[in-house]
Image 1: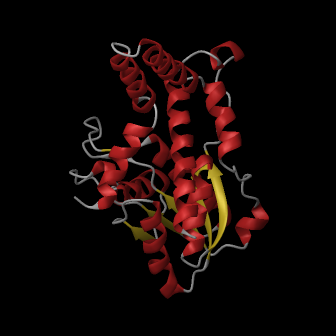
Image 2: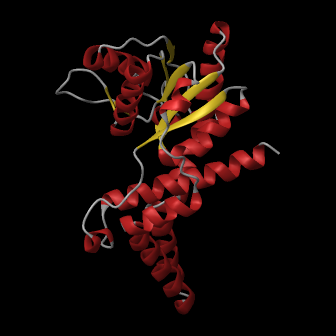
Length: 255
């Protein structure tokens, strides 16, 4: 097994919901012998899981754990040479279409990238192959992205990386594709919470990056519902904590 294949496994075990729930289970196991310690750990696991499932908490964490770039301006967009869209996952089984589909995150990024391309006239690139967590499937993000852009938006991809497995490889492979065409300044499209880490990787391979964020974390429902457990709250908390851990690892590895 390649080291990268361990990342999604370790991530799943450390992040919610598995991480705090495993803590709760550990507490219950310890409670047989060390009652007070076990109960405290079990209660902490349950409370953390509930807290992280609140969208209000998730939005708060996003604003304090990662730097959210502002929306890209027309002036900044005019200075770039290409628009690079990062993949965000796949739906390998989509029987209603008859072929694999981009995930919600990938579709949102593609839509925004297409909007920017039409607005600016700049060529498009896409980076995404088969992620480490998707090992074992033959559904490639790049293939699906190119098809969606052509069929739904009538836009071609000038550069396509369909082999990368994570953000670091996205940066390395796209840089290798852009370099022969003399492209150094790019607008980088991804979810707002993902761009701080993604930008660091792309700058690390010598590209000048203008962040082009989409999918900004924000309240989604009336105030009371923002402070009740929800699946979207837990999902956002998991994404933000994953990025925060990724930023710590990227910073440490870069020293």
